[in-house]
Image (cartoon, rainbow, N blue to C red; front, top):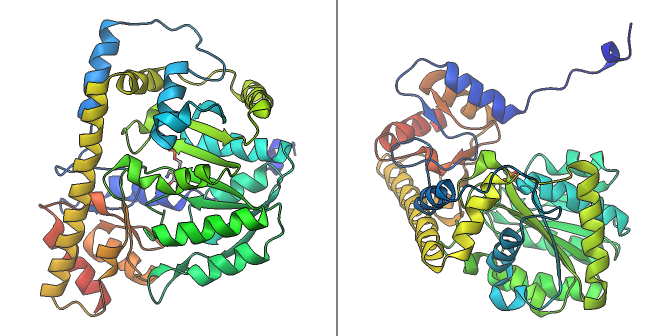
Length: 397
Ligand code: PMP
């Protein structure tokens, strides 16, 4: 046998598997609340009005297909920085940044960059996005896990977070999601972030802020990244990974960025050249189209305002669906407490349904959630909310 024939067969990603089951299901009542993609009230994919306008502008000013800049399109980098840090901080010269292959690409380069800088020990609160651990291990890092989410209170298990921050070796990396935690929707409060920052500063822990849903918690992109700005204002060194897949709806265009905050400005060029070299070794150049669309928005005060409204409207719809679900379940007297559908933030609701109940949602009701009970709130809408809640009611009784 050959070397290739000795390769192990990898299991398919469970969410992709669920998605495929959904597409194959001929039942007209079927509901997809699996993969983390925002959907419109009509159930289809959603084109942001700001993006539609920017695409039109780009079409009329076609820049062609040449390579872009190696660390990214400068206008894109500036806009991505401003979105995270605000205009003032973005201009202070403490940032090394890279345009990346969306959030996943930003994370990958972050893990490699951190390895170069001597960081290989990671702490991750569970449950979390399933790709982190394999991605970290893929580049030789080690992951220590702890509890992020308390299944009983259905909120952040803050004691566990604090205990781990206090006991971790000082060169550890804590990977936190900035907002709209995937899969639990359970975020730190403002006060908790302040406590985290104090410990991080005292104990010289490094934080990586993964930011994939900026804006979808509060409806305001600036508010959602306030923990990052707080860290910056404390003169901490840290890393931010940023995806525009969700908050610009540019999923397949792979638009993202990586930012490294360097305390001593003299060393920003070192970090910047390291990032650029690492990217060169893996990708050479980031894809242009989506970043150009984003840049057009970033450079136009008018389109920035449209984008702000887009994000606010999406968040409002998500909140409205959460209320509707809570309302329906109350009316149905569905056994259990469902307040967490209101308390959790962003695209995801961590329903607490068991794997068997989730399986029954699929087999008896054509409702495709995930095996871990993560529900994409945006898959529910005015037309299917009754059906969805009745199905949920039936499987928990
Ligand atoms: N981080 C989190 C928490 C995510 O949920 C996702 C996408 N599901 C990503 C990063 C990466 O997304 P993308 O590569 O599509 O930007």
